[in-house]
Image (cartoon, rainbow, N blue to C red):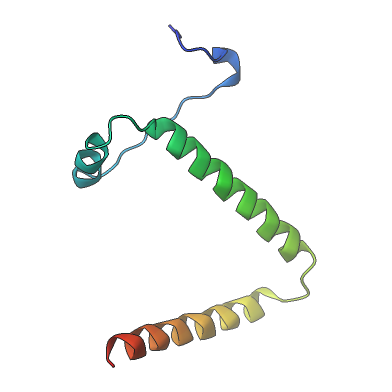
Length: 87
């Protein structure tokens, strides 16, 4: 039975498993509506994916090009991280 303000016909449900440590931290902030935080994060991710898809649909890169760029970016990111932490 739905007793929320929202019309149950327009809201889906999702069960989310989180590590116990995160749950303990969340309990420290009972005033936060964590379901709203999750909803916002999901909505933001969907918007970012839509933008990425729009950009990708206009790209002339092949899947092979994308893999190569990804390898290079990961390599450079790792190098930058290790260089910054070893100085």
